[in-house]
Amino acid sequence: MVDSFSKKMIETSTRSTKELSGKLPIFHAGSLTGTFARVNTEFKKLHPSVEIVSEPAGSVTAIRKITEQHMECGVVASADYKLIPQLMFPNYADWYVVFASEQIVLIYTEKSKYQDQINASNWYNILQREDVTFGRHDPDQDPGGYRTLMVWQLAEKYYNVPGLYQKLLNAKGDIIMGGNVRAGDLDYTFGYKASAVQNNRKYVTLPEEINLSSKQRENDYAQAKVELKGSKPGEVMTVTGEPILFGLTIPKNYAHQALATEWVAFLLSDEGISMMKAMGMTPIIPSIANDQDKIPAALINRRK
Image 1: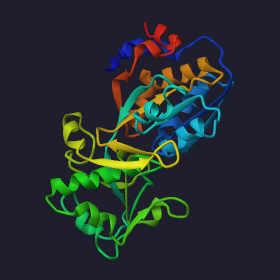
Image 2: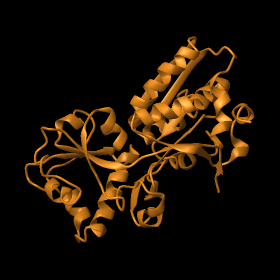
Image 3: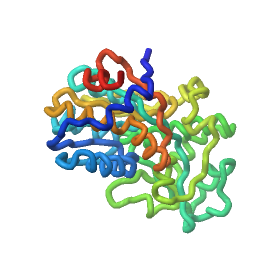
Image 4: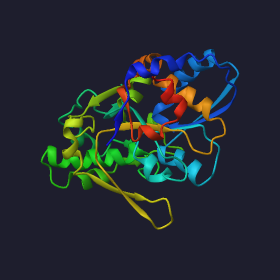
């Protein structure tokens, strides 16, 4: 059971009179890069002595920088909130806040082959054409990667096309992005709506039954399952389809807890919510915590 936070409780936490300074490393999902850059700029105006070091990566990679490489981190934000308890509890964190939702879309440009034909009814056929390339993220590194595979699994049932999942996996143009392969090199890529909005890209909105956006479709999404590498060599972790929810936490071993708490409070404030909306994200209002008793006392007290 999760606890809801009243939005009014966080409004006073964005205008602290306490002078803050120090280094604030933020490890976050790559899909949050644009949004967090904007939030960081405004936060720096309030606290000019703070040095913010923002490191985007796949969410799994971001978390493993903390749990395996033991890098210093003030805030970690994952595109899948469940990765925080799965990979960080209990040694590195014991709470998280769910702050935004998203959906998977199919992104393209004016140069994409058949871009004048593709839509929510035929996209899976166009992607299987010999001359089309389409990209997805590595499922072992990025929630966007395994969520794409979930969309394909759900699409097989929704469109009533037996074997569609394997057909897409085996398609000539299926490419895992990374290294020298970038989204701009391909005809189509699977990603979050906010990424398309922030980069001024065109996109196909996929049916609600498969795009992982709807709380009401939770039971349907749960039919999709993907196996990933676990936190230990040889270990396997199974992730189940569910509505896309972004989460964050402050690692236990970060030395400047008050600084990180102030940044989180700013993100969840009215100002932060406005910035998230402007960048194409859908903020969770009110935000949600797994256990309000574990939330930093400074954050809780200033919400009252």
